[in-house]
Length: 155
Image 1 (cartoon, one colour):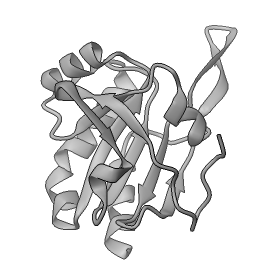
Image 2 (cartoon, rainbow, N blue to C red):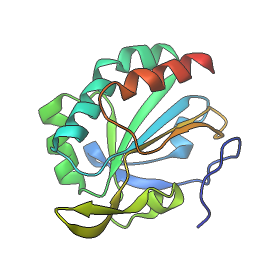
Image 3 (cartoon, helix red, strand yellow):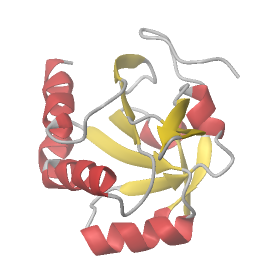
Image 4 (cartoon, helix red, strand yellow):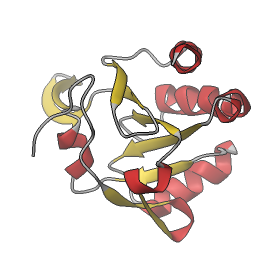
């Protein structure tokens, strides 16, 4: 599978999501879409990032922009995480790493002295025609959602 590139269309995808849904790029035609990849539900950085997107959700919506969070956690874990945090957007389960590999976010990480393969916190902004307009890699969670919102406003 090819990786994504700025200014190019994103290949279609479809994954299981919270609320018993299956969601994909085709569900957001005509709207901007923020896809943020994060390592794991219920961890400090991932919780902070999700809360910030939740808190700015109304602003994103006013700019015709939907938000999707993606990790390798199961839909069951995602449903619990979404409910616990009051997220106002859906979470996609990418247990097979299909979308993670399409966006090239699986990277070697150092966890407690051991090298492991995991999701590098990354965010992508796709316009209503399915074209990648902005990307953020190696994201620091705090304050990130506000930076993404500024890019949405500039579209």
